[in-house]
Length: 433
Ligand code: UGA
Image (cartoon, rainbow, N blue to C red):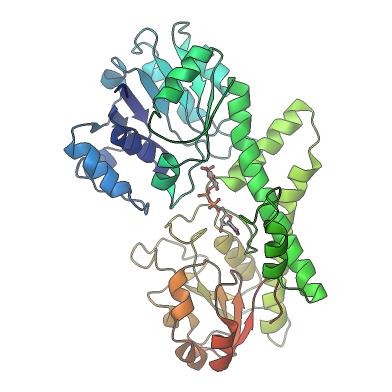
């Protein structure tokens, strides 16, 4: 494999994973970030996100002299074969992706890029962004390539090194091949396309995943009504390879830093292109409706004499958007907590990834140090994130502390028989209690 000089701008979970993994493949990588404290910590291999294998990959890259961290990328860019943009693209006005960070960096590196270098967009960006960045760079000798990432938080290193596919889009096939060659040694099919194809692929993938989840959550409601078990139905359809069993576990709605942002951005793209995509709208609306229904279910069990949740204490287990991450962005747990709070409930929450960080959520809920402290005096325990440790809680102790014995398990995580033995009334999603 030919070792290349690569600069990665942005060290979020995508950028840092990209940088550390490209170094592990033998490339010489410089990662840049505007946060000086973060750069200092990364130079000591201190990674402040929960991402298995990432601290080890950073340490190995530093030790081999293949990975470097800087604040300002401009010097490194001057000798780069490829510059990866791994920048935030938050939800902006009307759901469209906000490209301010991408545009500011393009401005800053324009005059430093060497002849013939490629600029690689890894951030999820609307179709047409590669062309916009090319126009901003105004460097005809530099090709802008789209190489979307398909990394799941909490599995990013694994997904980078063992991807299902590598998608690269460029106006010139040669530039696409040069970027694809950076992944030499990674065993995965390559899909080479143009930039619009690659950019849309990323949105289409996240939309499809969200659609599967909304389907599963609606199907769960139907199962409850008809007395069927969602696990059996999903197993029954999932063995058909045209359907596939993954991403069909019902839950408290889907969230995270990508699915909500990307589905909204794609909706905006459809509107701007004059294309009606009713499935996309329904996918988003189903998620909101599903959460409303789950909250209604808690209210039906726990409301006070006046029919509201005013002053009713509830104990929440899990706040992150899924297990294995400390990320709260667009967490379904917080969306449900907000709805409960709006009905007047008093919320105490425990999350194993947050007990030390203690994020400031004081207007919404109190973060406590143990699951038992969360359920103390509560009228119900609500499981919102699928942390495996919750399965093995001392459920008798939970029962002792709860004011009424309801456990709403929105992740179908717990063993109903175990809870029954503790005298608790378990209720899952899409399964008979
Ligand atoms: C998602 C995609 O899975 C990645 O392929 C993509 O690269 C990434 O977004 C991105 O665009 O960067 P991630 O946001 O890490 O990854 O989260 P997921 O693992 O996809 O979970 C999304 C949500 O769906 C979570 O709230 C999770 O709890 C929920 N979920 C997932 C379910 O409710 N049921 C399932 O069966 C699976």
